Amino acid sequence: MHIAILILAAGSSSRMGVAKQLLPVGDKTLLGISIENAINSKISDIYCVLGANAEVIQANLNHYNIQFIINSEYKTGLSSSIKKGIRHLQSRHYDAILMILADQPFVDAFILNKMINRHKNQPNKIVASSYGENLGIPVVIPKLYYSEFLKIKGDNGAKSFLNKNKSEIIRFKNENLLDIDTEDDYETYLKSIN
Image (cartoon, one colour):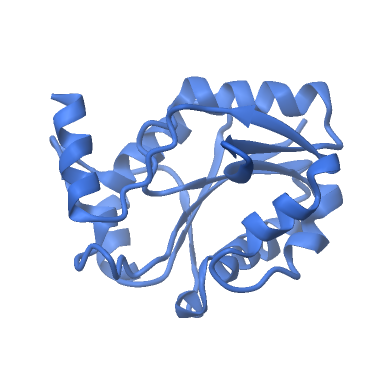
C-alpha cells in the first residue's frame, strides 16, 4: 500500500501574530516537531504545504528530507492547501494520503502509525480524528475520495465534508489533538513538555 503524509502548514497564523510554524520548541520549531513525527512514522513519502512566509519557513527547514508544495492561494482558507496537496499527489498514484496539521505537536509517530493501521484494515474508509461529536484532521483519505476533497471550500471545508459523510468514516479517538492557535496555547504546550 502506497501512502503519503501531507503536512498542512500554509496558514498566516493570524491569531498568533507571528509565523507559528517557526515558534521555538527547544532546539526545534513547531513545524519541525510535526515533520519529525511524520519522519518517525512508517511512511517515507512526506510532503508539506507552505503558503504564508513560505520562503523563510522553507529555508529554516530545508535540512529535512521532505518535499515542499507552495500554495499561493493560502488566504482563501485551509481547503486551498488540502486541494493543492491532493492535486500535487494525485499523479504520484498514492493509495491514500494521511493529512496532518503543522500545529498539533502531540500527534506523534505512534498515533500516525495507528491511523495507518486502521486504514490498512479498511482501505476504502476514511479514518478521521474524533473530537467529541465532530470529525477532523489528522485524517487518512483513500484515493476513492480525492475528487470529493477537491470540492471543499473555506477554512472548515474538510470538517464539513467529514461530518456530512459519517457512514464513510472510521472514527479515530485521540486525546492528543491540541491545536496551537494562540500565545496561551503555545505557553501551555511548552509547560507541558518541560
